[in-house]
Length: 224
Image (cartoon, rainbow, N blue to C red):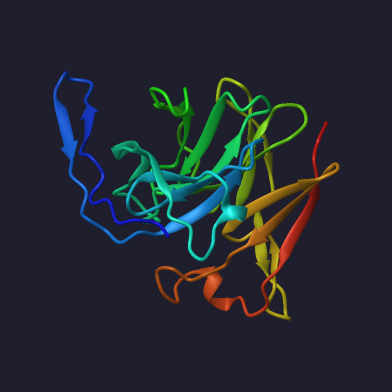
């Protein structure tokens, strides 16, 4: 069970002229979204509306509903943007020294280090349009589903985009999308990337997603 912990802390945003803006967030319901497991079997959970990361130490040992423990509650994990989902996709790097967190509405990927001690949270990458699902490949590249750009991108260890794959190429006669349309989650199997096409018309019938009647998973080769 994800507890209701209240509104995310206000976020202070510095401006180039030296002034500051303050973003105050509402007290929203708990909305657990993505999960990831560490090597010990602990489960980490993102909460998109409360702007938080929770954990369950040993989910296999729970009798009935597990109660999640708060790891971090921060304004960087919330959003005032679109789509209105803050903390979303999760991925650990190879040695689990950092947890990477997509913030969908802010078009960002965040990095959380010193997990369970100081929980230092910072911005790793910007301007990824609708950052959603995350996963690492064997070369250490972080793949991000950019649901508003209908593409997936790979980031290097400095957060720079070094690969872009996919595009929206229209709707087939059978109601399925050609290419990617609102890619949300991704998994790597061998040298191939599998991506879910969420394709939900979030803003009404004026989007291509409204014409989708057959939902698909796309498969693409990962470039060397």
